[in-house]
Every structure is written in C-alpha cells, then in structure tokens.
Amino acid sequence: MQTESRTIAKVARRLDQEFCRAVDYLFNCRGNTLVTGIGKAGLIGQKIMATLASTGTRSHFLHPAEAVHGDLGRVHGDDIVLVLSQSGETDEIVRLLPPLAVAAVPIIAITGSATSTLARAAAVVIDLGPVEEACPFGLAPSSSTTAMLAVGDALALVVSRMRGFAREDFARLHPAGNLGLKLSKVEQHMRPLEQCRVAPQEETVRQVLVRVSVPGRRTGATMLVDASGHLAGIFTDSDLARLFEHRRDNALDAPIHSVMTSNPFKVIHGSLMSEAVTLMAQRKISELPVVDGDGRPAGLIDVTDVVGLFPQKVEEELANASRHEGWGIVEEEVGERPLGRP
Image (cartoon, rainbow, N blue to C red; front, side, top):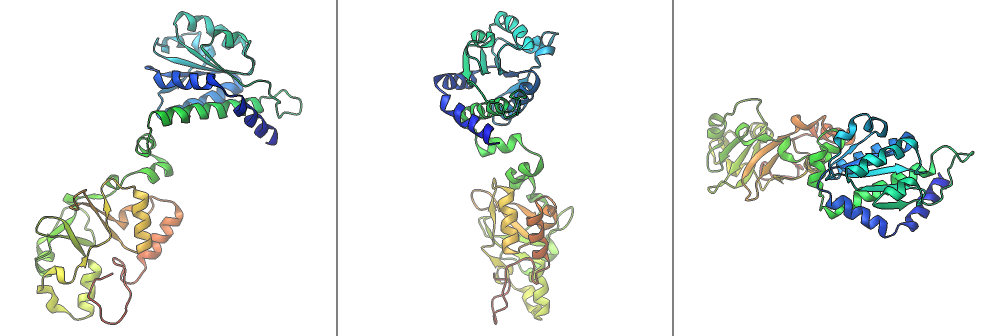
C-alpha cells in the first residue's frame, strides 16, 4: 500500500498541461466517452467509465477484443476514446488504433510510456512515467493500475465540477440504495396532499374530526391552515387522547386552534429525506408536514411510511421515539401548559 501510495503521489506531481487538455476534450465532447483497456487495465477502465457516468459524463466501456469484431459500430465521430495501457504496446490495444484513426475519433491515452505506439496515436497523453509495481516480482499490475484509477477519478471529478454537477444531479443518477435514500427528496416519500387531513383552524375539534376524511390509510394528524391557506398548526391523535385524559370534553366544541400545536416542525418541499427523518427522530414526532415555498401544506411524512427506509441508527431512533409517551409532539410535563404545545 505504501508503494502504491508513493506511486500516486509521484504521478500527481507529473501531471501537466496534458491533463488539462484531456479535461477539455472530455468537457467539450458532444458524444460519448468510450473507455477501453485489456486485462487489469480494462477492469480499471470499467470503474473509470462508471465514475464518469455517475458524475455527469456519458460514458461506455468498449472491450478492445470485441471492438474489432463488430463493436466498433458503437463508435461515432463525436465520441472520445479513453485508452488505458501501461506499456502502450498491448496487441489488442495496438490493433484497435488504426480503425479509430479512420473514424477520426480523438484518443486520450493513460500510459506509462510517452513513446509507445498508443502514445503516438493519441491526441492527448497522460504519461504515468516509470512505475514500481508493488508485486515482489515487479510484474503483477498493482501500482500502475492504482495510478490509472486515480488519474481516471481525477479526470471524472474535475470535469464534473466544470459541468456544475450538483447534489441534485447526483441524486437523480443514484435513486437506489442507501446513497439514493440519503439524497432523495421528501416529495418522493411523503403522502400527497390529497391523502392528508387538512382543515381550517377556525373550525371546532368536533367539526374537524367529523368532516375531514381522506381515502387510503389514515394518518395520525390533521394539518390546520389559516384563512390564506398557510400552515398554522397541527392536531394529532395524541392531542385528542389528552383531551379525554384531562376530561376536557368541552374543548371538542372549541376552535381547534386553541388546542393545536402552533408553528409545528415542518420541512420545505424539495428538502432531503434524510434531513426530514433525522428531524423526526431527534424531535420525537411521528408526523412531519411538508410545505411549499409559500408555507402552504404540500404533503405529510408519516413515521409508518419511513421506518425501514433508512440505516439502522435512524431506524432505532424512530422506534425509540414511537415508544415515547405523547408520541406525536415534543412535550415535557411541567405543570399546567397549553395542551399540545411542544
């Protein structure tokens, strides 16, 4: 590992204007970036291709042996070919160079020999220079392929920055797995407004409970809005239970704004779902309103919809929160306080 680390540091110091030219070619490419290599270099090439694709550069892997048996049909004049070969003399790579020249496709070479056949055919050469392989016999590709990988990552990430590739773009290309969940937006998981209970804050508790009904599985909260439609508060099943616990039956015919939680915790449409779930866990709330940019209800995140979506630590926080007495609002029993206030 120390040998490979020294190689990366050495290659980093060698990078010059050719690296910048390679970046310009990739950035200005109107077609696709085709990455090719054989053996271990080919496997590294596949990873570089995947990194390019996931950071905003259209790319595909072109197997050099399959290329000369028909896959050259994938190559278009607007493309760029990124070729990895430490020696620059590998048979499969050298055989691929003439047809690429006929197609007039620019070649970016990552190689350890600036005088090789590959380097002479390339428009841009990123020369790794002499490399000490970590293999005790100095034979197995190790330091050389590690250096190729580092250079490929550097190219992909610099081009990505030049494109202005943002977190939102990254999320769009990574919709699955833990990474996708961390970057997904609340609107992808919330219950849409038509499935939420929403009522004017001036109505009585009884009117709200009798009138507000929505299709599908019932949520444990009603979002209350003011005369202009902005979110004013929230009334949960826990609030209703406390009315009966405190024998405040008369409150059922009082305006619901007198017993709702005013200015509840909420998130704005477009927020990251990971942030919303963390807020729910930390504040021990089971329903989290989602509002638009003007503060009007857009949906609701219900804890039963999100448990299991996120890593174990957050799941445990949510599970612990659900066992909290008065789950649904943050509360501390300190003398007499307005019902439902956090």
